[in-house]
Image 1: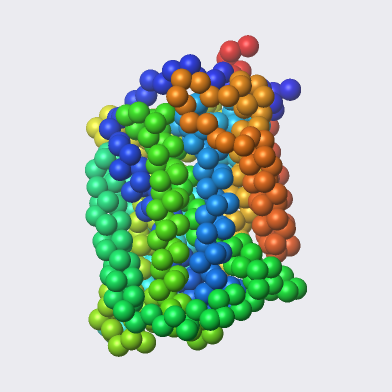
Image 2: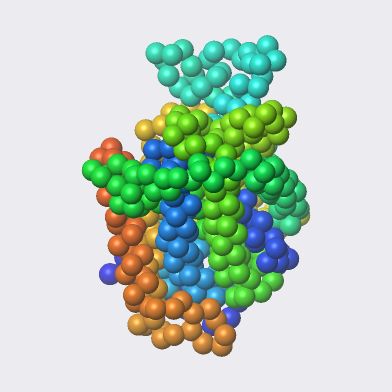
Length: 467
C-alpha cells in the first residue's frame, strides 16, 4: 500500500541548494532561541504556586529527562538520516510515507499555531506599553475577529510577523546573527536575576519543599503534575534538525545542537526556580504572570524588574524567528518530496533560502495571529507534539530492527527499546491529561491530513515516478 512506502536510507549527504555554513554554536542559539520563550518568565510562578512549590525544580528536572529521551532519538536519527525535515524525513525512511506526512502535517500545525500565539502575546505586551504612553489603537484593530467585542483583526500581531517573515527570508547565517545577540542579551538578563536574587534568598522559603507531594491528589498538584505542565517549556529543540542542509557537518553537529540546547535550558530553568522560590514564598505567587519581575520588585529592585519585563517581550521575538525558520524548512522539505506543491521548493538565488516556503509559512501564521482566537486551540500544540514524539519513539525501534545499530561513529541511543517504550508511556500519559475539546480538534486535524494526502500527496509524491 502506498501509505507505507518508504524512501531509501541516504548513504551520504545529499546535495543541496542551501548554503552549508552553520556551526554547533549557531545550532545552540537556534535551539535555545526557540525553547526559552515566555515559559521561564511566566510559567514558573503559577507552577510553583499551584503544582509543586519549591519542588518545581524537580518538576523541571523530570520534564528535562522526558524531553531529553526524545532528544536522544532525534540525535540518532539526525546522525543516520542527515536530511532536511526532522521527524518527517526520519519517519519517511522508517515507517513510510503516510506516517511521515501525518507527522509533517502535525508539525506544520504545531509550529504555525505556536508562532501565531506567540505573536499575539507579543502584540499584547506592546499594546500595553503603547497604552501607558497614551497611544491607543482603534478597537477594531486591537484583537482577533470577534463581532461581540467589536474587534476584527490584531494588527500588531500581523505586523510583527510580517517583519519576522522578511527577516527569516534572509540568508540563514545573517538571520541567526540577530538571534544570537538576542539570546546573549536574554541570558545576560536571566544571569542578572540569578546573581542579584541569590543575595536575597531565604532558605526557609524552601520549606516545605514538596507541599503538594510527589504525585498529588485527585490529579491536582504534585511534582509530577508540575512536570506535565512545564514539559512544554522545553519544546522548540525540534528546530535544530530543520537546519540540517545548512550545517557543515550535520552528523556530528545536529546531535550536539539538540542535546546541548536541552541540557543548557534545563540547568537554566532549575537555577531560576531555586532563586525565585527562595526569594518569594511559593504561596505568594498565585496568579503572578511575571514572577521574575515580581521577585525583583519584592526586594526593591524596580529598575531590574522593568528590564526583565522588557526582556520577556524580546524573548517572544526570538521564539517567532526560530520557529518560523524551522516551519519554512519543514514546508520546503515536504514539497521537495512532492507531497506539497513544488513551488514551495524554490530557492532564492541571492540568499540561498526557500523563499516561497518562508512567505507561505509567514502568511498563514499572520492569518491565524491576526484573525483567529487561539485560546481554545492552545492545547492543540501540545497534543500534536506528543503524538509525533510517539511516532519518533516507535520509529527508533523500527530503525534498529530494519537497519541495525549505528555505524561509523554515528550517535547511538542507549537502552533501545526500553527508553523508546518509556517515552511512549510518558507522552501517552500527558496526552490523556488534555481536554476533550483538544482531542476533538486533534481528530479533525488528522482527518484533514488524511484527505490532503490521499487527494494530493499520494498522487504527486516523487516515489510515484520511481515505480
